Amino acid sequence: MAIRFPSLLPGGIAQRLRSLSGGGGPDLMPQGRLAGPMPWVIAIMVALTVIAAAAGLALSNTVRNAADTLSGGVTVQVVEANAAERDRQAQAAARALRETPGVTEATVVSQGELEKLIEPWLGVRTGEDQIPVPALVDARLRDPVDGEMLGQLRRLARQVAPSARVDAQSTWLKPVFGAIDSLQWLALALVALLGFALAAAVLLAVRTALGTNRETIEIVHLLGGTDSQIARIFQRAIGFDAAGGGAVGLALGLVVVLFLGQRFSGLEAGLVDSGALGWVDWVLLALVPIAGVLLAMVTARITVMRALRKML
Image (tube, rainbow, N blue to C red):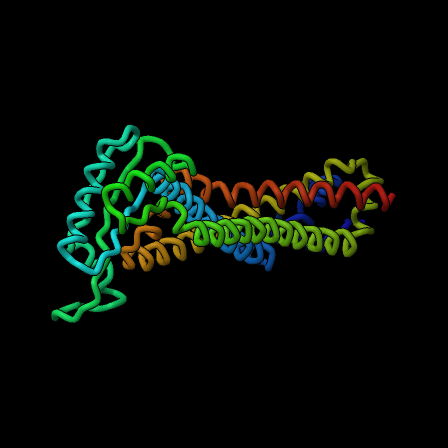
């Protein structure tokens, strides 16, 4: 009497069990790729993981590049109503800073540049009654700014420019950096949760297949099949489904990431531009479906081996 094997999972597990049990011959009805729900579930998980990972990498680049740029930056504001006195103090502060050891550059920001900076908030300013804008001096230090150096620069600037206020550029963005750090942890948590969800989906599918084909698996054991051989069949089938779903998910995720990247690049904002993905980031994103395939196969094998030990 011939043994009939019902379909277990997308990928032709029943036919492989038939061959393993001595039925002989190749698969009579090869299973088409992406034919069942499992590949599409994996595709969705991989796409969401790629998007979350890209967001986390972009935020990491933003923080790193901004910190490198601002770590040695100091801004001097000269708050003075009289325009001539304001310009005189700004020039004096710039000269004093250039002569200070450890300061590599000190430049007075032109009035035209200041107008461009405040134009998005105050609009084009014309007329004699416009609000005076503080003069700015942009200074660069050889080393990152610490509290001692900042205090020294403040004392020096106030000696030649009583209206000067000296601040480290990095302190302005500390709240922003804190928020970005929180978003990075959120992206990492989403990647971990999506990996857990993928493993849970594989576990449920394999358990369902094992329960449906319990009698078939027992017959295979009686015919000489080992737990490792049966687990390898499930593992291979899940691997094929995960590979197909992972490829589709990677393509979908990259399309979304590229689309969002183009949209954000149109903002022409410094922090946004500094978060652009590098080639290492793209390589890491390409590894996401590979990690998904490995996770799915390992989950399938562990699930089958544990279930078989309890079954027999």
